[in-house]
Length: 486
Ligand SMILES: *[C@@H]1O[C@H](CO)[C@@H](O)[C@H](O)[C@H]1NC(C)=O
Ligand SMILES: *[C@@H]1O[C@H](CO)[C@@H](O)[C@H](O)[C@H]1NC(C)=O
Ligand SMILES: *[C@@H]1O[C@H](CO)[C@@H](O)[C@H](O)[C@H]1NC(C)=O
Image (cartoon, rainbow, N blue to C red; front, side, top):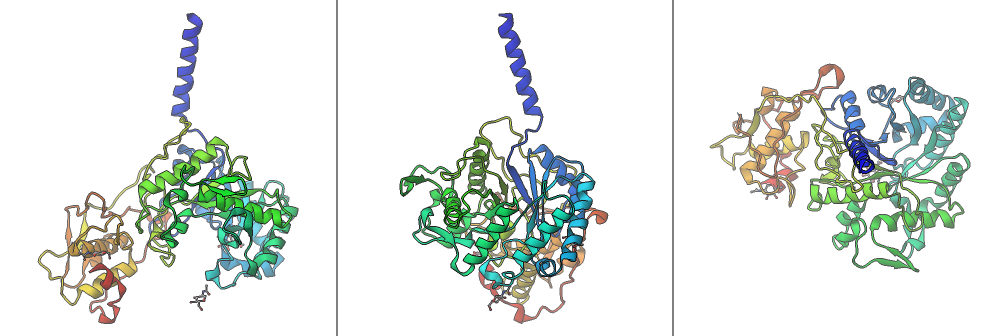
């Protein structure tokens, strides 16, 4: 009796302590992008990451403020080299040494746990028109030799984050996988270099994009462990596009003589707005799927060991180009103001939940809306909405998006408010000629949030530059937005 009691007590103590301490999920990382008009304080972001149980962070450059905030933390950090630096770093060993000295050695000395250097970001995307084909491998070689010279090559590995479209399958099954024919030899040289130097293969896999670009794509297969219609590839069963895609890469590596090079997933995620399949329910289902995979230690059919993956992404970025699609600004598991969009309901429990960023201050409860009584056919309407949407963000207005159900006035109000908030509620940013006004009544609906901007601390972030609204908006600006929003 006493023994059992003792055990019970011990277990409830254990449970209580596990629940109150953040548990780190081994192998779980997150991409921290910075293309936002109102960046939150890196120190607060790091606190949130600690409490939420992440182990790894991946950066797209070597941002000084972020790296300073990561000093003396346990995070394993991947620093990145933007594509536009590849030419310089490929042409000059001295430039590469300086990059390593300034952006790696200096921080390592100060207690930043840098573990990877990413050379470029998806440099072989067809949309780059081959701009980085000649410079990526030489830059990789120069950075690796600089790390060796700095005595850091044992602890810091080089890699190139590549989009999954660097390989393809000739048969539409994973077993037909090989590198894309236009870059086949280059890919083999890169893999050889990585393999010879203890580097890793980093791949970004996006089932959402498969679905977005092919309306006939089976939705269930985009998630994990679907039970319907597994694909049989010569006896190996595939139940998700993630596994099938990942193993197409494994086949490509095997075919070219590198069956064992380590693979990590550099970006994986699902957006929550800007497209009919981009919403919190799907995003949560998908991200829970990958996180539970990581926790379970179960890999893919061809690589059954544990997976390392970095969620894409940490926070919504309102300055990202929407050329890939309106969803592009909505990949965050956190909103622009540092609130988790959903919990990851991680199965084996005891893992931390996503916590909000603390100490966020907002501007006033004030919104800029379409003036009551103004006419929808006012000639200023078209150019105004066009201007507001081009400068700010209207990607939540669209078919089956979060604000897709607004009426015409609502659409205009959304556009005006977005512009007003992005400009830190400057009075001048709510002066759309005769057709806008301020209100303290929140125009948000159940699904559609009219944001209030966060008040960023001037010292710690770059302020967005205010654009004053041209007094006579040229009618030639009346472009696509007018057509789609009205
Ligand atoms: C270090 O990284 C920053 C941010 O990516 C970049 O602007 C800077 O040029 C780099 N320093 C050197 C010496 O290359
Ligand atoms: C690639 O080529 C297309 C068509 O010529 C052009 O529109 C686009 O701007 C180019 N992109 C880059 C990154 O050079
Ligand atoms: C509001 O804008 C959306 C997105 O462009 C459009 O689909 C919808 O038809 C608009 N609503 C009205 C009532 O104009």
